[in-house]
Length: 342
Length: 297
Image (cartoon, rainbow over all chains, first blue to last red; front, side, top):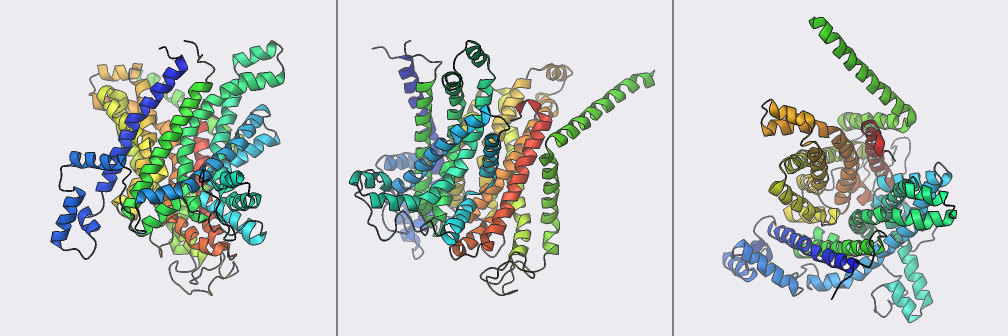
């Protein structure tokens, strides 16, 4: 069986994720063991005496040597066991699974919105240097880098909720007048489309608009900056000059020759963008009381619910790896320098 | 004779210094914002040092004015729900915010440089192990990792500093490694080695100073990010504890009042935060123009 060049590269890339995941597990394990004080005493509760602390230590396997503890930890993880969230009494896995769709809907939506705005903006800015588009691009990039996300969110809230009254109050994913749609994907917007409930779609979009814009404003800055820089570089390259000299149409030169090549460095930067957006997501969720895993983690932090926080860190890291993997695979697939035939 | 030998070299040095000032003037003229940013930078430092002595009210004293008063003559930035003066709080917060981010960036600069220098100079296992370590840090969404570290190590300002330092470490280590490894066998390095300098002396006395210009750019670009990061952490309730004024906390406290229209509680600390980040980003861009004219965007 012979694999094409691209399939081979994709496979290699997928395999490369394994050591990364291992590293993440080690760090998360260290974080769970780095709790201030004695973890056994902590999990036993305030009222525990020495004997019951010993009991808990044994139950948790804390009397074992570290490598054995690590094996147990990974074994538990493979069974989806992240411990129990003290604040709610349910398992962390359940809590995270329940809230993940809300976070994903917001994060992916913001990424999509940012890409839709930033890429054309960057291209336009590069093709028309020093025009108003270029200045707008520069302004948005500077603002996106300098503005704290939580501040942008609150400022938008003040203007669009308090002053203008266009936006609904920041109370989660849906107005209390509505019932959530039948969960199929867990994304309220998509589920309401599937259910054919347009009023519901409108309500969930209204609720999502401000957090989405906040996150997208922050995300589009690095993307627009990179697109502009990459586009400027490819437009100055020899092959674009040749294509122009050969009399190809402006459109064809821009899209087929310049843009496709400029896209590659942009996709590479997306890794860094994901890192930022997943972090900023926590802040935006807090500002808008968005019931995702970010605000869950913030609530858990306040009451020192360590198992919940660590479950959150681990799942965010895995999500980040998955997103990066997706991007790298896409990169390989669209890279014009790699042909499918070997 | 000795006079003759010295004269051309000093004049040459004077000339290159002249060229440097010329270049600096050129960059200032080309992008006046850089000049502005240096002015803002010194302003921030002055506020951080002298602010606490100059503010009109005690930043933690409650009831110095009526509660939730909009900005006016007595209270320039208004008052909060406990009647504290927002202007005093925002000004006094500067010191803490700058202190957190400066210490974090200094820590990651020192340790990142050491790790990167060794990795770039010796290569081999040193390089592989440190590279893996840095990759592992980068495998996390950085802000989330900082949250995890602070949660695990304990909720204190000190740990905010450490967490911010750790998540910035890879940037410095990678840059130092790249800058060192391209100079590892340069002419001046071989000359230094031949004249009998030890490996460590060659590395830190001869190669490392050459990596400083790009590192300075990195530091000032990174400062802005460190400020945002620290403010973000205290916004979600980590590190700095409530009565103490800090920009992130001030915004968090004001967040409860934004939907009832008390905008000044959020806007002023938020603007201060933005101004600080903006200053460091501008300085970074300016320094980059100064150090590396090719990378201008």
